[in-house]
Image (cartoon, rainbow, N blue to C red; front, side, top):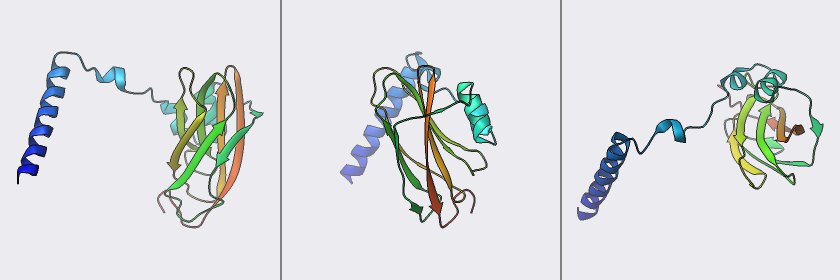
Length: 155
């Protein structure tokens, strides 16, 4: 009984502290929320998504490493890792060519960070997974075909 009581008290104190901080204006949700590229996520083609994200569709082959399964048993949860040996990276985006909305993920990189992201995406069917890295004014891309045996985007 005392463990549940302690957990309840800790949770109540934490919630109260957050409420006070928000009430005093110390916590502003607009400062902690990420920018959302709505047009890019609503795009129906890879080209439209890239244009909405970066303003161009011109990419160069780059030394981008995509780690993904050759065969995804369940398209609802496909693990993807993207890494590269590039400097001054501004963003990393992951697109799935045959998804209804191809842009699966977009990560803005600020400062001197390692060029590495790992996430799980949904894939509706067998398709190319495309990684696009923006470094300065140049877009680099690489792709890997992933075969999906069970649908993930609504299937």
